[in-house]
Image 1: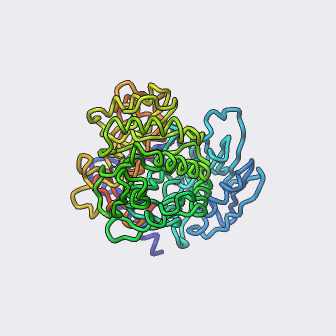
Image 2 (image 1 turned 45 degrees about the vertical axis):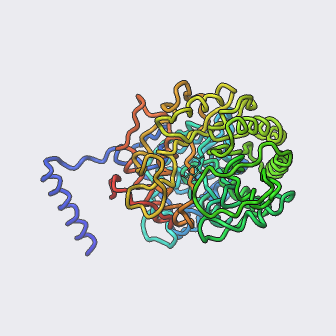
Image 3 (image 1 turned 180 degrees about the vertical axis):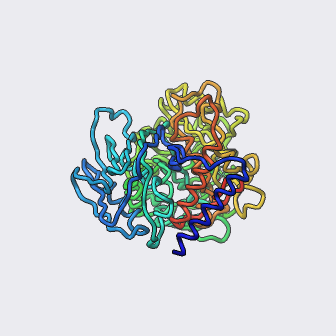
Length: 533
Ligand code: TNX
């Protein structure tokens, strides 16, 4: 009785508001039913008819190699808030209230991450040619339901999804998030938490910045003091830490369960104070510097003319490659401001063609690596200059493409998640053209940065998060969200029509993302430019 009356008052108020606004309430149209998904799928069409409904007897029905694991993942996400059992079963006999996940090889394996969804009163069907495609599609399935479905306690409400047909695939093969575990150390549990966060946005690479002046975070058996000495500190008074090989394997495996590949970075030849402090013989003068706990960059360098430098690099890269199943090793190469330019070029050329080449991995380097000639064909450049390139950045970036490689775009003024949002942000840096709003993080396109580098030359987009000022995962999540949503959409969704990105279409979806993060217990920045509901 009471709720009917409240409903009646609510309807009357809505009618009065509509009258005052000089218009009548819009009829329910397919448009109104559009689900709010980040990143926006390639095509979504709303269908007539009723909504798909989950009930207490709904099942998740899986078929195909690897389908069951994705079904378990989805079930785990949806069980707590619904309070439903959502039993996973093998087969194809799904009913009208079941979600079916099917791997159906269709000969189009050229696009392994593509998937399709049909949802209606007849059931919800997710199909893909690979388990990976199914997993990406499962992130969309989550977002077809109200954000509260991600809640950590049971919630009493109906759980329905709009009737839609979705066909989706990524624009770029590489959609990355970067995490600096060197300035501050993040535990295995922290990294797993971030992996879960980024998986929702269909991110498929996690770049771990494992070494820097302040810390060396990965066990290397041939050089144990790297972690014994170089792993102990961090920025300021924070304590350090490092990953044993078992820890690293655990991270790699957890990421793989979310179809995310780890890209390890050993930053060379600058950003190496932690290594230099661990082994005096790596220094030109044979004297180990003190550990570093500040946040300056550009003061350290390996000794380019010593043979031991190359033994060191070769041992580190060999061990790192052996523990990394993914195709890439990142060798850094940025801000080597205290390495004389000729020495820098000689070092990069020697290391990339010898020790790194011997690992069999594809090398990624920050775009300054493009100063060196003779990079192995196919070396990938990661661009960190601005949307308006700084001097030299364009030529350096083109070097990789001229050598048959591709580019990952991480323009610092729009894609660095450690930049402050506004002047009140309580941590973060501002060197990359000041604050970076969610809007700025969204309104750019990787094809518009370096002349001559177009869609086919671009491997993808990555949003790094540097941790000079970020000490824990709450800080990291606050800086990442919702801006990582902006970046993920640039990386996954089709190129904007006529080159124009539609902020007004994105903004309500960013709000839905934040609501979902809130239900998940993930922190985010309450951006004033978003249309909060
Ligand atoms: C630049 S640009 C860096 C990092 C810092 C970051 C802080 C580049 C590849 N490196 O060393 O942590 O700025 O925003």
